[in-house]
Length: 116
Image (tube, rainbow, N blue to C red; front, side, top):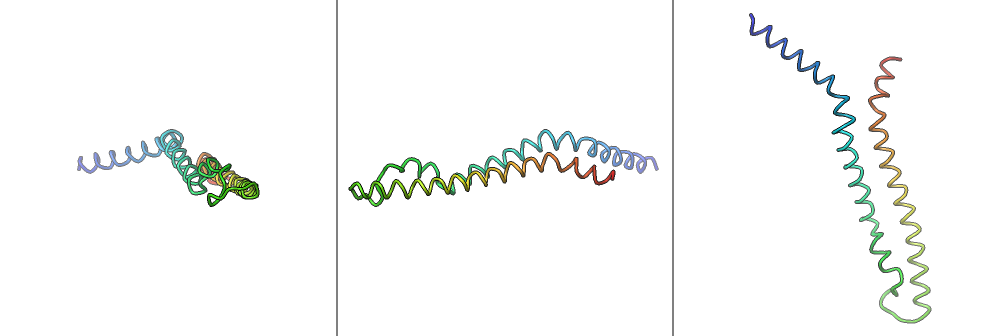
């Protein structure tokens, strides 16, 4: 009979400790993991859009041809590509920053809904 009481006591104590530890984990280790996850997604977006490669090659002529008209054409094409890709990167970064803020606000919103 005492083993059952001890088992129930340990189970209840573990549940209570997990519930009390959850907010601490959410805003410390969980927040760190979420921030690293979002940062990796932002870096992946930058790699997918090849922004650094485009910046390195902005003043090089396309297709290896020489001539002032090719330079003007390649510079204008790459300039507009950079504008478009930086715009996409800004939207991508904003999306993942919003995801991180949602991570911060989610427990508060759940408690708010439970109360009201």
